[in-house]
Length: 120
Length: 146
Image (cartoon, rainbow over all chains, first blue to last red; front, side, top):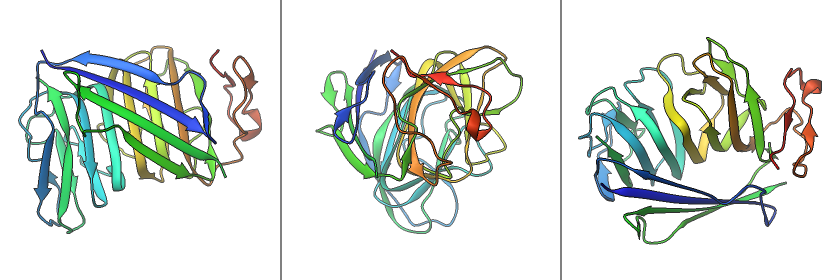
């Protein structure tokens, strides 16, 4: 089984924050591997191209344009990421279905997206 | 203004997925500092303690039990995290706050929030010290994790 390992280090004003870095390790049934994809300009929410997993347990998304991300067939609002912003979910449970687990809205601007999706 | 620096290494089967760790440096107006917060059992969504900033630009949350997180006044669904799951957002833009549903279990949430327009969140304090938010109308003081 693929294993995802993350280490997050956070400093405030140059000083490592107490309790960090944190390290987490999870095993998932399968992953997309690291993907890079170009999403055409669209005025509506579009499923993330590697949308192949019925259950998403871990997710990393980074986009070069401002995007809004909806998860788990969410129908209102969304997570707004600024250009080069990043979303990381580890040990999540997103189960709305392969086509609706992860959707992106790119404000009608062609967007390069990279990341990894892991799940079942 | 506080400067928050985040270094994030993500490895898949031992290989860094983006070739090198992601480094991000943000100058923010306010930060909660690292917090460890107890949220009593509740059957509805409750605003995160400490209170979210008016604009959240960076967020890390780690609840110790299964929790659903709603961002930005989201009214349906939510991000389900398993026990000790982790949500990290860098360079996000959340204006409508953060609320959590703890499945009617007492939970402990660790994390840090940074952004703009805080209600006067005090500067981070040392390990073991208590931070009282009663002046903000928040009933639950919390203790910085030792």
